[in-house]
Length: 105
Image 1 (cartoon, rainbow, N blue to C red):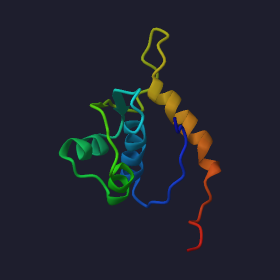
Image 2 (cartoon, helix red, strand yellow):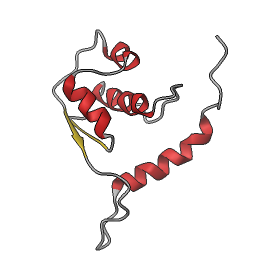
Image 3 (cartoon, rainbow, N blue to C red):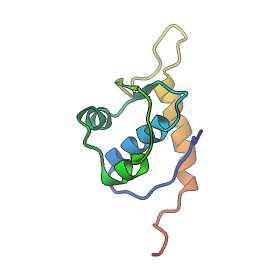
């Protein structure tokens, strides 16, 4: 499974959609959680960015559930870790991996 991806976009919603699309390609994951309400709605409506659509075209995708949940709410209390916060910290660690400018054509 892909757990990191670099892509160039000025629209964070496209990046969120791409992250969901990558998980859709893995048949072992039936439930996908996202903190992006816009991205989950785009998939529900069947209207995703062209880059995302291109990734998914000609691919058999099994039935999945895409679930939105509120983000950046801190720990849940009583010693329970908010996994969205863990994912956010991991994503911050990946930021320095991508170059700041797109590669030349």
